[in-house]
Image (cartoon, rainbow, N blue to C red; front, top):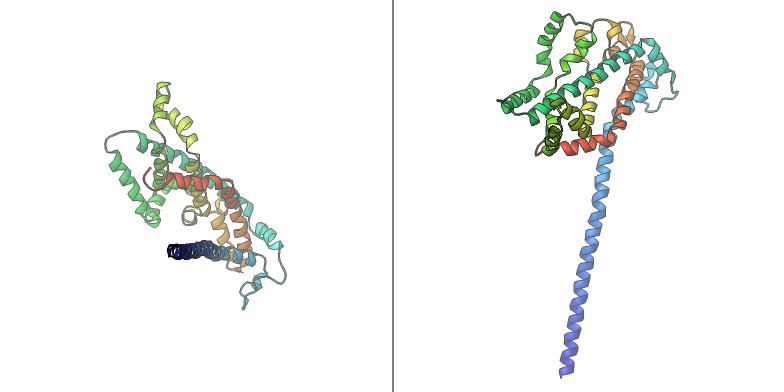
Length: 306
């Protein structure tokens, strides 16, 4: 009798173990299945979003390789029957496009350098120096981000006119050289740098300027790369302000030059798109060069808590 009871108990234990193992196996299979499906769905959505974002660039390149008469054909041909590589040469010679690129490079590079200089100095003052009303001034400085650019156009124009800077490089650079966004971005990064480093530098006799340029800025390359990229693209693509302060073709930037393809004798859409394709190359090159700093700068700087 005892052996039968033991056999029954052993059978029940084995059945329980088998059920438990089966349940665990099913749960593990479900987990693995969901773990595989999740990344597939995420990658599919990201691919769709990427294709949607890239479609305007594809359309621009497609238009740049067509004859002007084929631009508005319906149904549209996404791949032109005869690829017109000569449109890029014609776009370059149709207008002084090389001069447009030179002007834009001067403005974008010069403006970016000035923005990095002014923003780093202001950010260091708000992050490290203690003076009466510092926080109130900083908040007031940040409120300028809520002011639309169109509201500032008229007073800035009269100021530039009174200074005699109309149709000049300084008119294109200086009004945008002082940015609250850049100051805020660098201030957040500077606050994450240990104060002990500055105290050690002070004991060695370093001045504030030397601490900023030889200690703080070398440690802030990711944040400087992010701000530099945003500033360069902003100056490169700016259209409204150059349209107001520039009145001759020899000082025109690329955005102004592209709209010159639309004239009273017709609209050269293929040349315009070819010029736009050429215009995105410098920004793309800079993006590739600072890509490793871009993600690091955004992740380390943050928008709060540093």
